[in-house]
Length: 272
Ligand code: HXC
Ligand code: NAP
Image: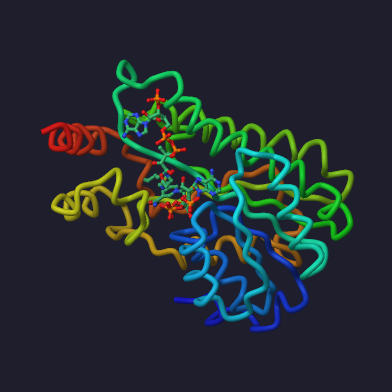
């Protein structure tokens, strides 16, 4: 359910939100929730058709820019384009990510680097490029992390390292940029239905088992994450910074054993 059920539709009127990886899934869900509360939203990603389709879905859509977060110069240009069109950003959402299941001993150095570059370096690039805008607005940064950041999951050595890095970077940024009025927090989604991430990591035939292992006995929705994002952005949550907010129905509490078994089955099936 969109956040307008609970918050004023004008809460983010006149505010600008920039979402990396905003063309699909959870990040698009976050973008839509901000748009529903009146924000102007800019999104970036690599696939133009996906950005076009996402743009069509966003009510108060502002701008869409094709940019790879691994490349700092075009990303900086994308953020400047957003500023020119929509004004200095109030919220930066770092959501671009890559993921695949792979046993550590089979992961090539370039495979490891690819995920570190998209998730961790990409989040730094966006953060660094957004500094002047966020300083001007006393804005906030939301990093989209994952349970792999604090709970080891099989076949996710690259993702665990990348997301743990993001959460630590978030704390450093919160510590250093608090003096400018800039806040930084991470959101850890649990298993979110109808997303690329869940499709890659979990067999739909095993959905019932997955749900039974979630303390709240359901998968999450993109709007669950959109609501948390809306709460963490100014003017709300104005004294919260440096926090990892876990929104997973309690999924990570029992550990990753069930995930590890399911992931092993999926890998075996993929490898024939
Ligand atoms: C082993 C793999 C691999 C795989 C790629 N590589 N896929 N290794 N198993 N399945 C290796 C390649 O062999 C290569 O290394 C290196 O990674 C780079 O591969 P490219 O295909 O050139 O990379 P690129 O085109 O940049 O694509 C990035 C990608 C891709 C991550 C590999 O899948 C992608 O674009 N993903 C974006 C969408 C996505 O992943 N969404 C899910 C996010 S969910 P070599 O050595 O051969 O050169 C998420 C958390 C979910 O993040 C948590 C759920 C609970
Ligand atoms: P998704 O739809 O694949 O979202 C990832 C987005 O990142 C895509 O729009 C992708 O678009 C973009 N992206 C990837 N590489 C990029 C790059 N180099 N530069 C710019 N954009 C790039 O997957 P999702 O499942 O919704 O995941 C969204 C976020 O939630 C991720 O941070 C993920 O780690 C996190 N998460 C998801 C789950 C889940 O259950 N799905 C759970 C925990 C955490 P292009 O490919 O077009 O660039």
